[in-house]
Each structure stands twice: as structure tokens, then as C-alpha cells.
Image (cartoon, rainbow, N blue to C red; front, side, top):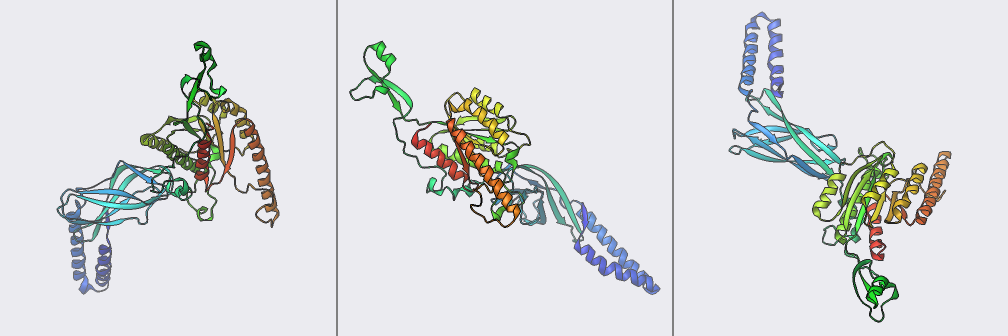
Length: 450
């Protein structure tokens, strides 16, 4: 594409307009005016002919996959190939998606002579989690005489993967992370005798009668005692609700209320899940994930290791909330069929809808007898006791506080119902979500409840 440059516009104003006016008004200057206009025309035409291939041999290469963290400045490494190795000055532009924000629209780049490859860093900040695509790059160069601007569009298929930013949560859970800066929790002291069976041995004076294996004792005709060991590796599953209620906005702090892409409840669930994965890895447990809406969308069996954590992260970063209601019948049936070993099930869901909470409680007993269940829900806004915090100035405030009080009462009753079935229910704060989740997990490890 050829576009008139600033120099062409300048000389058009300086030559064409004065001489055209002069030749029109005075016949004696008509020949001079025509000569000047024709000369400028041929110079501009010659500039076009000499510059048609100005951008040929220049191409742009981008990495196939770019990995970034949400709300954290990142760098796109742009590789510009100059085949003729001549010194050139160009302008570079990237067709970044609207979710990836850069502080500048284009960049002036000087391609040095004698070098076929130039590397240019492009700084940007992703505002939204997920998978985005950078499809086009734009090049612009000036003609030989500077009258024209030559533009070129280069196709570039590059995927930008924006992961949750765990560094944001590090300040809140600093006491639980190692001092050297690496993610991980200090190993916690465990009390008790353990639950995992290790071996049998002959009875020794002082052994508890509870640990005598009566069947083997009858077979061998002498007392035999069971020996247990503390569990070293346990299965931890975080189950994420990606249904319609998880699409609601979670940002309530003043500094983030005007954000163009505010965090949803699902975004906070995903961040808390990854924080749990880091914690379980440090404690030596196996970590797995499951997401559901009206069906089970994804399931990764509990394992450990860096590659397993990256696999879980690659599944979660592109998880989006649906418009469907959660199907708890399908979810709990899937859990019963696929999780045979006793595990800790951490549900991140929304139970402020009375119909959904009733449906959840009806199915909870299917898994609470075998597994240890921990249910967590983000505390809804203004869920406080009536007139306990903010003053009431209008009738709307009174009804708003009354609605929050009634919702809190329903959640307290839900907590009691869940507790009777052997599970735990907690309302967690948005900004302290990761801290509270990890604290609950560490407390369970200490008490050997699993």
C-alpha cells in the first residue's frame, strides 16, 4: 500500500497551489507554472517507481506461543528479517487484541546494515485471562525521496496465553511461603499415629487393644498388632464451578471497580486453585482438578510434579463461565465413579441460590461418607447482619441491608446442614481467598483428618 507522506503534502502546498493560482491569473506565468507542476509530478512519479520494492525482503517472525501473567507487564520478542542487509528505518506495529494493552501504537526501528536479523522487544500488559491471538504485524517505510509512505501487512499467527497472576496473592500469604521467594509451604508438623497400614508384628506389652488384628491373632493363635504410619501422600482435588453464577463480578475494591476487564468469581476460583496446587506440591501431596457446569468439563487425576502443575494451569487458564445451571447429579455421580480412593474434595461453588443449594445438599451425602469435603464460597457483597456496619440513610439502603441479612441467615442454616453431613462450609473473602484456602488445607494436614 502506498500512502502520501508529509513531504508530498508540504510540497503540494508550496508548489501546486501557488503556481496553479499564478498560471490561472496571469497568462505570462502560465508556461512557468505548467513546467513547475510537470516537474513536481515527474519527481513524485519517479519516487514511486524507485520505492515500489522498498519493503521487499523484510519480514517479521513471532514465537508460536507467548506466555504472560494477568496484569503483569510482559515482552513480545519481535524478530525482523532484513534479507538485503541494508540500513533502513521503518515503523513497526503489532495487531494486538484489545485484551492486550500496549503503551504505544507503533515503534520506530532502525535496521542496521550488514545484519540480516534484528530483535525488537515490544512491551505490553494483558488485562484479561485466557487465550488470545496476534494475527497481523504492520510495517511502514518511507520512499527514496520521502514523498511517499510504503505500508505492508505481514501475517503472523501467534497465540498469547494469559495465566492468572499468582504474584498478586504472595503478599497475602507471605507467612505461608518460603523466605527465599520460591513458591511452597514449609512442611507442617503432624500429630497422631497415622492412618496408613504399614505391617503386622507380634504383640508387645503396652500395645493398645484397639490395634490388635483379631483375625490374624485367631489364625496364628498369638496376639498380633497392626502398625500404622503417617500419611505422606494424599489426594487433593479442587472442584471448580464454571456455571452461570461464576460469571458474576468479584471485584469490589474501589481501585478495581473501574477496570475494563474486572475479575469474575471464576477468575478468583482459578487463582485459588493454582495456589492450592502450589501448596500441595510443597507438602508432598497429589493435586488434581475438576471443573463442571451442566456437565463435567475437565478432569485431571491427582499427581505431583512441575509438568503436572503446568498441565493443570494450561487447562484452567482458558476456562470460561457458561450460561447453564450446574448439574450436581451429574457431578456427584462422576465423582463416585472416578474417585475410588479417599481424598480431600475442595468445592469452589456458589450456593447463594436456594434451589441450587438444596440440590447440592441432596447429593452431598453420596461423597461425604467416603471423602473429606470442604465447601468454599465467595462471600456475597453486603452479606452482614442487619445494620451492623454501614448506616442507613435511604429506604433503598434499608431494603439492601435487609436482603443481605436474609441471605446471611440462609447461608448460616446451610452451614449447619452441611456440618450435620460431615462436611465443612466456609464463606471466604475475595481478597483473602488464597490465604484462607491454604490455611484450611494446612489445618487439615496438622489434624490428620484426611
